Image (cartoon, rainbow, N blue to C red; front, top):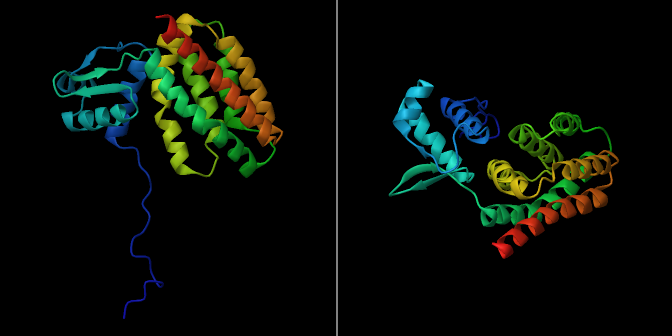
Length: 228
């Protein structure tokens, strides 16, 4: 009789970067950098020609980007870059408000006090971009900072939900939030406080600061909808 304890039925396989991953990264970078504009139609054939690949990885990449809200797939209009408005970004921020403060606090409890190298590095990158000359790069550095704080929460479902908000948050921050409220310097100061709390192992303070940080953005966006 076969004893399953003697040998695993399936052996783990290493995660490899696929052609679809590379195509998705290229399209994502072009959108977030502004080379492909919000509302612009994405044609599979044209993208495949530019990237030197077949249409299959392009199609798969677009489906993946649609799941993060960066592109919209319509039966009638095909695929286009999302043109987020205040309502779209508010909804994303409201979901962050429910999940991210908890995840940050949980991550602090799991790892304890000590330096957070990835968060400190992202914060340094953001500091060098505070002139506002490259808001897309600044927004992406901020996204890396936030992920470094919450990714250690030991709940892959929560992490995945927050990761899926990263693209839409980055796009909406530049195209909606900062166009009306150039708050990146205030946000940077709040990031410094959040990181200090996390590195000191103060989970309660890190959670409170994170909640206040995201709630302020939600309030800005709600106000924008009320006055338009």
